[in-house]
Amino acid sequence: MKNRHFAIVVVMATLMLSYKPSKDEPVQQTRPNIIFIMSDDHAQRAISAYDGKLIQTPNIDRIAKEGMLFRNSFVTNSICAPSRATMLTGKFSHINGKKDNIDVFDGSQMTFPKLLQKAGYETAVIGKWHLKSAPQGFNYHDILIGQGEYYQPRFVSGKDTSIVEGYVTDIITDKAIQFVANRDTEKPFCMLYHHKAPHRNWMPNTKDLEYFNDGDLPIPDTFFDSYENRPAAEAADMRVANMYLSMDMKLHKQIYGTETGTGGNKKYNVEGAWEASYNSLTPKQKKAWDAHYDTINTNYKNAQLTGDKLTKWKLQRYLKDYLRCIKSVDDNVGRLLKYLDDNNLTENTIIVYTSDQGFYLGEHGWYDKRFMYEESLRTPLMIRYPKEISANSVTEKLVQNVDYAPTFLDFAGVEIPKDMQGTSLRGLLTGKETGHWRNSIYYHYYEYPIGWHFVKKHYGVRTDRYKLIHFYDDIDTWELYDLKSDPKELNNLYGVSKYNAIQEDLHRQLTDLRDKYGDI
View (spheres, helix red, strand yellow):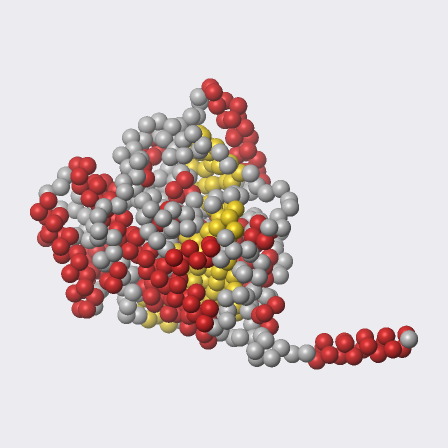
């Protein structure tokens, strides 16, 4: 009997050692592919899975419907490049060294793409990079230069730079699909598919110019905010009222005469930048562009708007172009999802949709981001993976972009480095999270007085109900908000005796978080 059992074991071991997956059964079936989709400045309420009042985004919504929607998803530092560095490293800005858009990202440090590559993944980044240093840890990259251009964008791949005719969102998607089609099918892949849109200056695809022309969009209740008892908010230069007439409103100089907008940086050569963008259009593109915007230019000249009427007009102009850019993102996400469906890649591919941060769509009279207030602190997040995530799942747990890197590594079966500061979301996604999840998040913004918009440096803590913010450097003010009674954050409660106990507790939590993350 013993000899018989021994013989069976030997035969089974031999079969296992000699087994090689066929072409139709590649290795990556045991490990998921990962497609990390990130747009730029995409506000939660400009996705219909969160709020359908402004726009319908059926393709982005599909990811949420077939996976999990995160209702309380936040960033650690609401500005483009630092947010990207946090996602790559799983570390806060003060640890990864990328505190603002001026800093150069140290690409030699450990990132999740490097660890996936080392573990046998084929890795790629396509689209917006924006970190001022060359990508590391990728088998392939094809990235925009800096912020990138909406039309005829420049791409860098290896040592080669090329100008590609067309619209940037379409082109990034073409390149992403091409990478997936030409990948090494013997390996799982991780692709960072990162869009420029809907970043300022919101130049839509010409085919989308006639969308949102059937009336005005709703004006936020806080659009004419007085900033009472919030001096840092009052000091910022990011009001819709001060948007550029040229680059933002897309008016021509012969129409507006003198540029009156400060636009967050009154020293910027905005008229030259806008002229260069307009002149980069091909004759065919310019014909379609002029057919739409010449009417807007003429109507502006004839209306002679001033004061609140001009500010409301600027809001409509801004929002409609912003949403048109998002329509193109949604259409192209749909193209990629269809490619995965058609090529039997849906079941074994993790799809993540997020943005580098949220954005103001007129709330508090603003555009842009940076502040720890809800509209820019929040960022969309939805994840689909049919093998492990139930459809139509929703979580209210507090998560941050520092959690993405450990999540990808966890799903790939790669050990998560102990110095990563985020926590894998896998337990939340699969419904198997049994430990104590965080009950507060930490935030720190640094880009002042350099850069744009003059938002003061600040840090803070947010719980499920309360928020405490400290503005510092050339200012020393505190703000406290009860998000249940004051979700629009108009009433600063700091120093109000009724909230003394809550204030003390938030100070303690903030100190604990700063100690935990080493930001002291």
